[in-house]
Length: 344
Ligand code: PAP
Image (cartoon, rainbow, N blue to C red; front, side, top):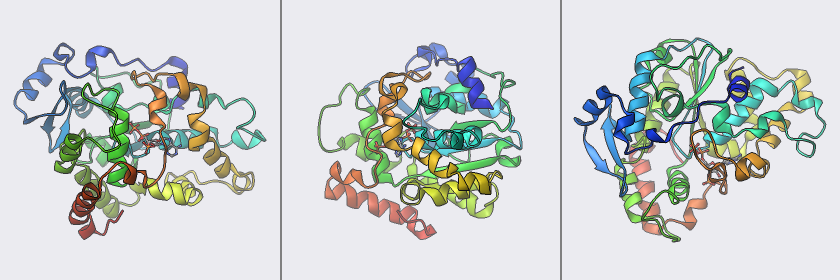
């Protein structure tokens, strides 16, 4: 299984040269392309560039170019897609546990109190690598050690996905979250990187404005969601469209439907042994945020693991957005998604 292997062999740490701003890390092709793209200052040190209708930093554009050129999907692949801060960490671990460990979990009478499951000593992002942010940064990685079904993640919109993902029988699991909570989560997550950040109880006005204009990493937010939603209506056997809010309110139903969608439904014995409940308990916010690896570790992409766990609630954004901000985001969401039957 891919995740056990990536853990055993250790995913390559993303070299700091790939962090935005270091052009030396980029191929000449990528640099030439970026020079032609519309640019938008995003912070004092970062720019975003509009590439294939969405806004990305330089590093992502390099990853997309390599990915589009080299990635060959297998029919058995599973691709997890999220907009950043929509529940990626939770989904990666639940699916890893479900695919790898569901026959093992029920054997352990109390998986939380006894020693943590080995999969829980690794941060989710190192169990399921990002295609464009990690694996394909440097040209064409050797994926031969990944066993089937291979599990990959991406934050990319539908349109720029490699052709073989769209045309093969591989499955896509898309998880979205309401835009207000995504924005607030992103604001908290990035505050340590923003030289101009200061402690405040209201989301930074510039960040808010850019998000509304669609000029945020992987944005426009609404276009990304709509792309996957419409594709999931056309091909429900290919794309499962999920919401963070339903994972929170009806996790048992969602996990069972997800298992069926992927073609590995829970057996009667597993259901009787409460495999679904075990996976959900292991992946609960309280359990994950208290694991040593997530309290003090860093992921192979160089991120501080504890920053992936803040509150994990629905509607917390109301504490960090003014009434005007809430109305503006609600209006945009209604205008862009409401007419397509998507409500948050
Ligand atoms: P990423 O896209 O950068 O990987 P991602 O995991 O999608 O980040 O988002 C982090 C959010 O998921 C955080 O939300 P918050 O800021 O509103 O709190 C984080 O708390 C939440 N999260 C992480 N793990 C869980 C979990 N097990 N259950 C519920 N929410 C979770």
